[in-house]
Amino acid sequence: LTEMDRVITLAAVRENGAALQFAPTQLRADHEIVSAAIEQSPLALGYADHDFQNNRELALETVERNSSALQHVGMHLKADRTIVLAAVRQNGMELVHAANTARADPTIVFEALKQDPRAMQYALHRAREDPACQAAAAAPLSPSRKSLGANKFFNDR
Image 1 (tube, one colour):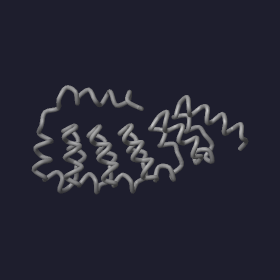
Image 2 (image 1 turned 30 degrees about the vertical axis):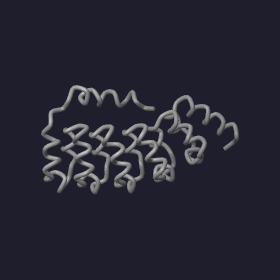
Image 3 (image 1 turned 135 degrees about the vertical axis):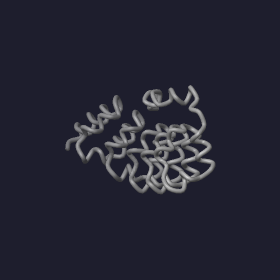
């Protein structure tokens, strides 16, 4: 790859982070390019090299900006309590992207249910039987939470 390839790719991801998907593999591992892509669109993490997806600090920062980025973090980070809580506190339905250990954790599931009672469909094992989780799942879905699903796509930053 030439320096011009790098410059063009950097300009592209600064304009549209999703352009990272078209970058050569070598540039998907370039710190400056990946950082610029994620800054523009947190969901660009899904196109980054696995080293970035498995970086806990970067994953947490990205999920805090956009809960949907949870689907793109490394598998072991989908079980990280802090990262999963950051996601489900924004959008309870992101529980679907959490690891099974997180989906069985009553604390995580309760936080997801407080945000969106429909998240109970993704809860596992002891979390389903937890009285606090059952009560949260029975709570009515407020109008502001109903509209959250559509709005999350516009909250990319």
